[in-house]
Amino acid sequence: MNPPVSRRVFLLGAAGAAALTVTGCRNGDTRAAFSTVGTLDFANPLGIPPLAASMTAADGTRVFQLTAEAGSSRFLPDRTTPTWGYNGTFLGPTLRARRGEKVRVTVVNALEESTTVHWHGMHLPAVFDGGPHQIINPGAVWTPEWTVDQPEATLWYHPHPHGQTEAQMTRGLAGMFILDGDEPVQGLPFEYGVDDVPVIVQDRTFGDDGSFRPGPPAQTGLLGDTVLVNGTCNPHLAVTTEAVRLRLLNAATARIFNIGFADNRGFHVVGGDGGLLAAPVAVGRLLLSPGERAEIVVRFTPGEQPVLRSFPHELGMSREFNDGAGGNDVLDLLQFRAADKLAGSPQLPERLADLEPVDPKMSAATRSFILKGMYINGRMMDMSRIDATVGAGTVEIWMVSNIDNQPHSFHVHGVQFRILELNGADPGPEFSGWKDTVFLPVGTSARIALKFGRHTDPETAYMYHCHLVRHADQGMMGQFIVVQPQ
Ligand code: C2O
Ligand code: CU
Ligand code: CU
Image (cartoon, rainbow, N blue to C red; front, side, top):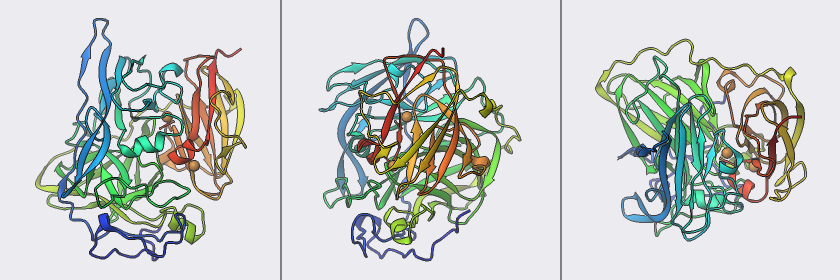
């Protein structure tokens, strides 16, 4: 566990987060750490992304509509910001479907440039994955459809055009996609926006004119000085129940959040990227790198106002570079305002889900992925090259090693995996469930067991890549196809 607060962190002056100037800055990678503690009053009610409307087609398919569009948003009291969103001006609605349901999404591109929409964490045919190959031109419509065939989970969607993903996500394109099981799990809060709340965490820097600023050129990508949660800056959430489930999504493009509470209270992790854990895990901190999700349950007492905070954490670099990559920043994320009377919430169940075991001895292949520079195994992304061919329904062991001088976050499309080992050791119970993204600080490695699905397509690839999005844009990505095993 990391120490709660680093002694290297200093407090901002009264200028506040939005007007922050970074001192001691030599270049983007050696900027000084900073803290927003004491600079926020949490005046704004947390925005809750609306649940997407859907209609049922004659064959029972649930049909959603998403339009990617440009607009402007008001994050700051006195300035507006040019932004992009789905069905609105920033982020998008929460899509929600049940296991076994057939879904179709009518995606309309009302932007002036090409985009794609990727369903991060979803098991679906490669042609509907929304990676760099499924380009939607301006004015065009794309209608992927698939049958939901995986456990209940908090997934998300975002653009993925090669080389343009960081820019499009930074403007605001992203949303949550919740999958439900047959029945809600007894004892887990389940009322959307009330005691089951999406918490989409991002960081940005605002210019004087209100526009998003790219920030100093940094190897890791954009590190902002202002946190937006669900597109709200300086937010609070009114709490009306004793327990609240937070569906945390790190939708930042580069920043790693080390989630905890300012008062160091504990909380329970109940789910990871690909679904619920077998049992709740009590923790005080939880690392969430770009692309990762976690579901946590927090308990409150009447009248209190605890603050969700991101704490310093180790990136495996020298102090100077840890500062430069944001590892020593302290960022207040969200204040909770508990009512004077809270509705009772049940205790968490002892068991949450039956996690299908993955037997590494059943592995059909073992592969190694070395991350260094913007390369994976010495190669940059080439959209016409297939890097791996895997058999549908098989288990593979992938050894992913970060021998670079900066952190990376390794994500695989169309599949979920289990982390067998992080640096040769057990990853810890909070990371014991299904994952699609694993965080790799400098000098670390992960041994993961992937259970590939049944969709085959020798013509269309899925991606694996670093989810520090600037790295993926720069070529830190590869392609695999899933075929019928011989
Ligand atoms: Cu969030 Cu290629 O993915
Ligand atoms: Cu993905
Ligand atoms: Cu990376």
